[in-house]
Amino acid sequence: MGRLDGCVAIVTGAGRGLGRAHALCLAAEGASVVVNDLGSARDGGGSDCSPADAVVHEVRAAGGSAIADHGDVSDLDQAERMVNTAVAEFGRLDAVVNNAGILRDRMLFNMSGEDWDAVMRVHLKGSFALTHHAVRHWRALVKDGQQVDARIVCTSSPSGLYGNVGQANYAAAKAGLVGFTLTLAKEVEKYGIAVNALSPGARTRMTEGLFDMDEGADLWAPENVSPALAWLLSDAARGLTGTVLEVEAGWVGFAAPWTHGPRRRQTDRHWSVDDVDRVMPELWRDYRESVEDRQ
Ligand SMILES: NC(=O)c1ccc[n+]([C@@H]2O[C@H](COP(=O)([O-])OP(=O)(O)OC[C@H]3O[C@@H](n4cnc5c(N)ncnc54)[C@H](O)[C@@H]3O)[C@@H](O)[C@H]2O)c1
Image (cartoon, rainbow, N blue to C red; front, side, top):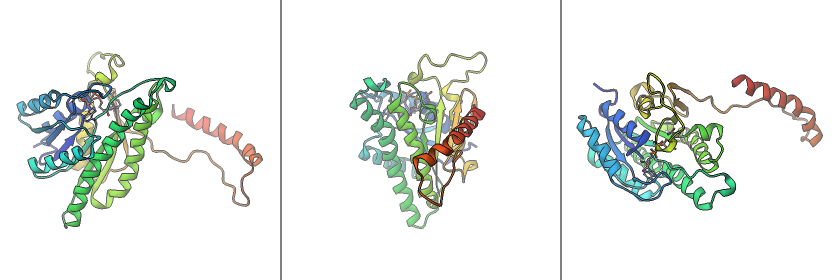
């Protein structure tokens, strides 16, 4: 008995790195997986069917159930085809894992419009396109009187949560996915759809050279991230929505949500610049202290 027996999931960018580890882990827990991967280069160029095909082969060799999809996540028609493939091949769809991603790292003054657009297209539009069609599918089932217990996971990043030099485009997209997750969680809870974000860290071609091998357990292995994703798709996570799970270097936990920091309200008149100047030094000091407390 696996924790995901009977579950049908689409994992995007599942031909390599984290997506591959996700697909193998979900399948090992009993899920049937649509292994999507365009097979592009790290910067988004080109395409190649072999990464997705190889993962499907690995899943099947281990006794699991999977089918390949070579579509581009940022194309609405190809994203719709992924949903249709899941339903046609496996009879249902329970989960969508928006994982596909590319990098175009540059300092902002060297970043081209194309570098900006390419990153927004794959991460933001790609997550929108597949999620859009999956939500339409599940909403139609609910309208038809069926009960739905579906999961969407979007992939954010420490860059999006905390910022990282040279990744203004990527960080903006990854922070955008948190806003997308929080908003969508509120929109679709009534249909039985939970939406969470995963902020992973792992040694893949995207992070080559950043993370050394540790002694003992290889804490930065992609396989060390996927079990938390599998848990998010399992029955045990029912009711959990609108959160960001941080999973890296052996850690599993929640990112603290955005919350109001130190603030003052003035209700008897509009603020003047002098009023702001009167309260800000104290607020700034409280803010600095509260930020230092968290580090
Ligand atoms: N590796 C890390 O430490 C790390 C940290 C934070 C976030 N992430 C995020 O995790 C996700 C996976 O990253 P990874 O490190 O495994 O990278 P990776 O480059 O190893 O894998 C990404 C996969 O996405 C595929 N892909 C790219 N564009 C696509 C498209 N338009 N349609 C379909 N597939 C496409 C690629 O072919 C590739 O196989 C990404 O969203 C990344 O931003 C990774």
